[in-house]
Length: 204
Image 1 (cartoon, one colour):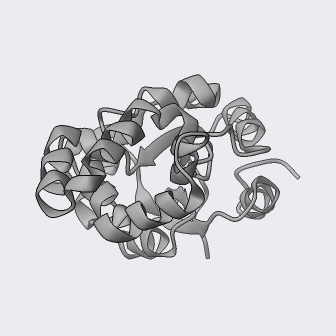
Image 2 (spheres, one colour):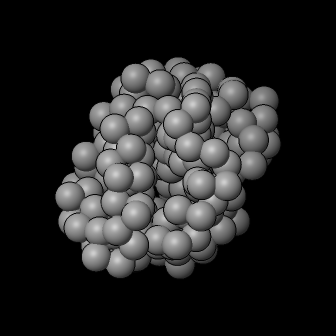
């Protein structure tokens, strides 16, 4: 039997705020140029190292060594990062506000560079209504490493068995489940609401 829910921990990117990294280059580079950049530098792997706390200056230095033609593109991404956040995820802010109204604690746990995190709340103000956000880039460890799930539980006095963790990454959901959380894969705000109603965190 599932435990009652005291708290909900939400990923941010593509759960509360849309993250579409290619949008950082809208109007500046062609789609083909962006695709080549992402492929040449293995952008998702590079970005994960940023989420783990590496400064963007070091990422640029790495790319300047390995693919010097793309070093200015790294600068562009950082300078235009806000464009990679095209808006809030529809319906998610209302879920957060309804959880808070129901007396459920709501926190964030995000893989995000410490240097660009400040843009998130500007685009999705609901981030500022969370009790706290644990940012991987500040902690030096990324999901699904079990240490970051333990960290948020210890820092905020959470009982994982009574905490719903929500993420759009299957790997992160699996990591949270292994750490004892009630883990839910995010698809839409409507599906999340139904899941939280089923678990008794929200009224029907």
